[in-house]
Amino acid sequence: MKQQVKLSKVKGNPNNPRIIKNDKFKKLVKSIQEFPEMLKLRPIVVDEDMIVLGGNMRLKASKDAGLKEVWIEVAEGLTEEQKKEFIVKDNVGFGEWEWDILANEWDSVQLAEWGLDVWENEDDVKEEEEVYTKNIEAPTYEPKNEKPKEEELYNEDKVKELIKKIGLSNIEKEEKEFLIKAAYRHTVFNYQSIADFYAHSNKEVQELMEDSALVIIDFNKAIENGYVKLSKEIEQSYLADYGE
Image (tube, rainbow, N blue to C red):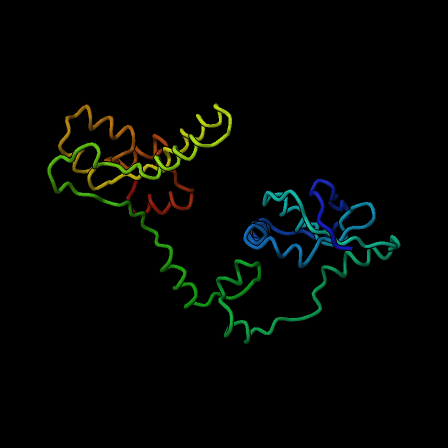
């Protein structure tokens, strides 16, 4: 019987002979995060004691994906010998891939992301590289005009709308105070005007604007201060392109 249960109720099988290597495990976690409905279509198989017979890696990946519940199918009435047989047969692939169809009808990069060991189609890889470039391009604004007025530097229309809505609500005072503070996240900054304002301000104002990351003059300094965070892969690309 298929049902959805709390993930904590399902027990991994300590005698599971199937393993999955780190790279493929990460792909499985990503797959579950992007397509959790798959778990309902292919539930984890457990015995009456909630011990996994089929789907140990999916259970582990579901935990890493942050799921709180999983779909299971309870296999009732199996002997211990049948349970052992199921564990092995569930992981045996009797069929073979028709590689010509895969090559002509599927994207090799996408197949690899789904966990299938495939060739790399040069056209697919090239298309992928066009979407993600190595260089890190930050928007650049050059001062063009006279110093703008402060009210021209930002727009708070959405902030005012939210604060009005919060004020009319029936929630607790502390909750209102918190949500009002959060509403200011919707302030829209006009960075072209900010660049003009910065260029025509004195040194003290400029330093304060840099400290607030309203302008980034020194990209490395911004990284050190935590305003810009890079993954290890992007950091390596950045250093390769721009140096230490």
